[in-house]
Length: 216
Image 1 (spheres, rainbow, N blue to C red):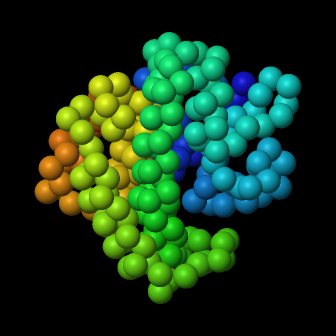
Image 2: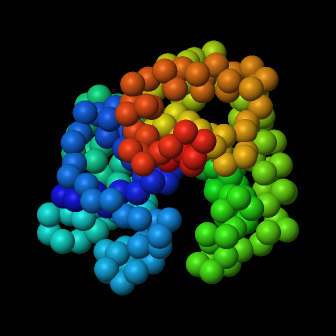
């Protein structure tokens, strides 16, 4: 298998998962800032033009970080990062979806329409007038998520999971592109510090990350 990797938060989420699992995959870097992911050679692997992608041994390709993670979790179930029972897996997926649909997708699109506008305006439809509203929605929904968290250390309870990886990576990215989250949130703030202290958090940063630059 070959991982098509990049400096971007979704690929970082996959790298953090791999680091937590101790899985080593050969990788090739894709220059998303230079638009390599929109060129024919990359589109032949992933017509959606997004990173990461995983080229399988038969030459076919899987895309979308969470789909790749789910695939790898079936091949490498230990240590479990989705769950060991149907209920555990459903709860992890529940929290990951809450984070993605309500928070991280809004962070993503707000970046496209504001801080990343110069990069994306010729690649995708953009709506600069929507950026401020999307940022506000992300802040509001993070506070909403904070209010639902229980007393466990992690989003889905006592077990660290891909839900934690997903939200952490995107909040860290948001901090680096002018979308800081409220450190006064009673549960999210200490949760973020706990995730940041895990060795996989630092190990998953792309080698081209620079101080003051985009974290992905």
